[in-house]
Every structure is written in C-alpha cells, then in structure tokens.
Length: 299
Image (cartoon, rainbow, N blue to C red; front, side):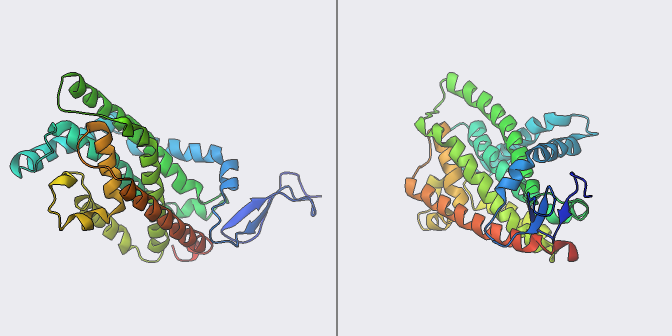
C-alpha cells in the first residue's frame, strides 16, 4: 500500500499536480509550456518563499556589528560620496534642488533594481545544492529575492521620506505632485524588469560563469546611462534619445519628478519602459523554464 504522503517525481523542472488515479496524492510532471511560470505552484509554496526571504535577511547581516543599520548607512554614505564627487568637484547641476534629496531619490530606487538583478542573476549557481536535493517550484527563489529587496527598499524609502519631509517643511524648492501615486507602479516595473533580466542571466551563467562578473561591471556602467546622478534636463539634446532608450531612465526620472517636482514626466516614455519590461520578462521566463530542466547537469 502506498502511504498517503508519498510523492511521485517525474522529470526535472516539473510542476506539482494532484491525482488519484494511481493512489498518489501528488504527481510532479515536466512543464511543457515555456511561458508557464507555474504561479499556482508558487502560491502553494508561499510559506517557502517567506522562509527564503527570512534567510536572505539573516544570512546578509548575521555576525555583523551594525546589523540592519547598514540599510541606512549604505545609501547615506553613497549619497554623501555623490554630493562630494559629482556635486562639489564635478559641479554637475541638480536642477536647483538640494543635493541630498536629489541624489538620495535616485539612489533609493536604483539600489532596488541593482541589488535584485545582482542576486537573481546567480540564483541557479548559488543554490545548486538545494535545487539538486529536493523539489520545489524554482521560481520561488528569484521571487523571494524580489520580495526581500522590496523590504530593503521600504526601509531605505522610509529614510528618504524623513529627509524629504525635512526639506519640504523647511521651505526648500521641493514641489511634490500627484504623480507620487505612481510609486507602486514604478516599483512593480523595477521589480519585474530586474526579475526578467535576472532570469536571463541566471540561465546563461549556468554555462558561462564569467557573465556573473561581467554583469556586475555592466550594472555599474548602466547607472551612468540612467539619470541617477544627473538630471535628464541638463543633457545635450543629441544625447537624450540614447538615455531614454534605457527603460530605467523614465522610471527614475518619474520617481524624482513625483517627489521633488523637478525633471520631466512622459506617459509615452513610461509606456515604452512598460513594454520593454514585459518583453524582457517573457524572454526571461522562456530562458528560465528551458534551463530549469537540465541546469543540474551543467552547474
């Protein structure tokens, strides 16, 4: 007699379904559709996602002296460095805005993208030992990274709001507007874009480990192609199309425009960023599902 809790596994990169024809309570079958993310299975394993989120926090700041205080120290130190180097030495203008909220606004939302992309791009190689021992929906791992970094963003965003509120009350030239309501959409676009790119790179790094180091360098260069440390309005007209071709540019610019009231906003540019995000997510899904079935043979 087969025990009720027994699980039958069929193939790698599989999805779990229930079946009673053979007496099994759960059957794991190969996923045949490349565009299938298996969100139903992910929802069933939502407790595992939360455990992965908790693991990310504990593993990152365990045995550190300051612990979660690094959430505040890192963006503050980065902002101060930018103020000294780009604001005072390079004399890059900030559209008449105080330097502290100007740089902190760009750094806050950029960090969410950069940290999420960096972590999801190594999800296969960094967790090969876990993937090779037990079945669970593989998408739970990159999704947990997106969520854990969203929590980090929330903490750093709280720091930004404190500084933003101080400058707002003190009568500086900040002019927030109703586009603040777009903040959840901007975060969603950032999260999905980093998830899609992360799945693409994680699929490629199973065979080509050098891409991991190349990605870290590429993300640093990408920041300079995104209006994080400079306002888009100060760029020469001939360079603007190239910067706006970067889907991150309109997201960062909209975030800064919404809270600080300086910069530019365009529904067309934001729509372009949305279309690129959807396309990248589709490509990432196909690549992730294809590599998921056989990555243990190459890692």
